[in-house]
Amino acid sequence: MKIIAIDTASTTGSVAVVDGDTLLTEITVARRETHSRRLMDMIDSALKMAGLDMDRIDGFAYTKGPGSFTGLRIGLSIIKGLALVGAKPMAGISSLEVLALQAPDVSRLICPMMDARNKELYCARYRVSDGVLMPVTAEGALSPEESVSGISEPCLLIGDGAHRYRSFFESCIGAYARFATVADGIPRALTVARLGMVQLQSHQTDSVRSAVPVYLRKSYAEIKKN
Image (cartoon, rainbow, N blue to C red; front, side):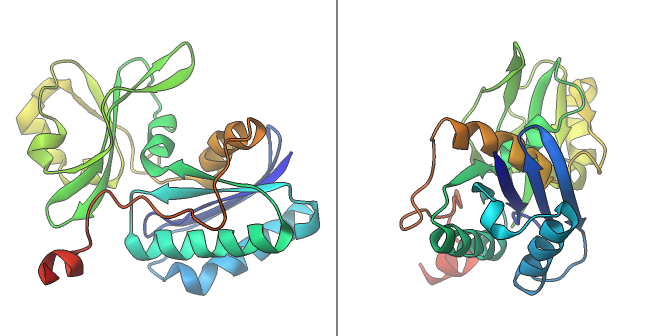
């Protein structure tokens, strides 16, 4: 099965083309430029480098959130368009699951953290059991204090949120805090593809008509309006 996977949940954009377990192409761009200006060009370039055209793609995977409201909307709208035109299935993947799967040490509690701004983090906790990623807590938009509340064991913090509040976490949970590298905490489309392939092959697909991003909270504009 050949699929295109994208991540637009953060300022970093990533596109991958995979054929089953084989990575054909991956492009990750860290420039601070809106995804609307670069995403289709990245998809076109990835297809060309993979030696494929859109007709040979069997499905799509994308990060559905949480993350940047604008980035998620742009990514989903482009994937919806491609899926609708080609009558191909699509699968939405949690941004936090992507980060958790990229953890370099799966022997301890994994805590993916994305900077949600306004002194909040998008976060959750996971464990890996028999090679399977298992959620320990639900996803949420929490304060830094709440994000590590109750942690009493060594844990791996991964993602841009972990590094933004690194000093706080070190003072709060001390030696329990371990940190993945900045590079490990950049969401990769290859990881989206790995998770998306499982869902597509088991027919756990999203509706092109009704799929929406997962924001976990209201936007700042909505909060201010209310």
